[in-house]
Image (cartoon, rainbow, N blue to C red; front, side, top):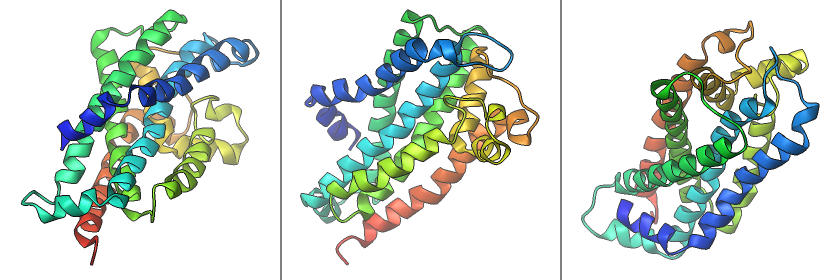
Amino acid sequence: MTGRNMAHVVRSPEEIIIYFSLPIMFVLVFGYVFGSGMTVPGAGSYREFLLPGVFVMTMLYGLGATASGVAMDVSRGVVDRFRSIPMARSALVTGRTGADLIRALLEMTTLVVCGLLVGWQWRNGVVDALAAVGLILLLRLAFTCLGIFFGLVVPNPDTVGVIVFPLAFPLTALSNVFVAPELLPDWLGAVAAWNPLSATVAAARELFGNPGIGGDSWPAQHAALLAVVWPLVLIAVFAPLAVRRYQRLGR
């Protein structure tokens, strides 16, 4: 199943190009056009503040590709064929997850190279940088499980965008991806601080040694813990739901 999903990626290079263009555009627009007018708590480069957020945002928008791919398989009857052959009921989830993690690793490599070219860098050593990448990929794993569930639930592939992107945009906007929560109004800052994206972004900034670390709230002080707990909760909820939904298809 992992090999099958990776084969689809290899056969659609234009999808990869389009998919990578969005986060790269965010880096260029926010880093160069708006970067000079934005402040970072404790001073520092806004591009270094921004890049960890872009890494995490890319993992979130991967949810759309996952849900669309699964929904397309359902609409074409491919999933019905899977259910008719002797294979583990969890294979759809684990196979798609494996392919998405490989794809996420390629995305991260591209984004890190792009970040280095525009002046971003990690400052705490290779081990901490790899730990930050690990937390980002853990969040991607959680979003993959959520995307598989959405793909199995929606009535057709066209519905995916109606559900995923209205969910992804406010989740990104009400986080610390672009602005530190302490610079927002109190109630918005509280929402942003407890956002799952904010936990991973804050933990990644700390591990990379990038600016934007701090805050007096409990989520800000325990970002690394929440960066592990939030994805594990999402996986524990949506992975079983996806497998159960897969078993119930056609009944």
